[in-house]
Image (cartoon, rainbow, N blue to C red):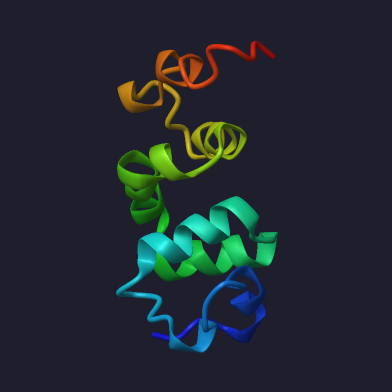
Length: 99
């Protein structure tokens, strides 16, 4: 499955036409959830489904997405109570810069 042309701008560092959206779903979801527009997110949810997006957040998103983005999607998809999203692991990431 190829990416729609509207999403090509999210893949500035590779050839978007060569990305298989099914095989490389974690990579595609990472870019869309971090940098995508509302239309891109709608496409991702229609293509992958809400449960697959949640599973991505649990398995890979917690390591690859920014804290702000992860917090947004955790709140939006009602994943706040899950252990893998606890704040304790985020507090250690910047021990010398407390902001």
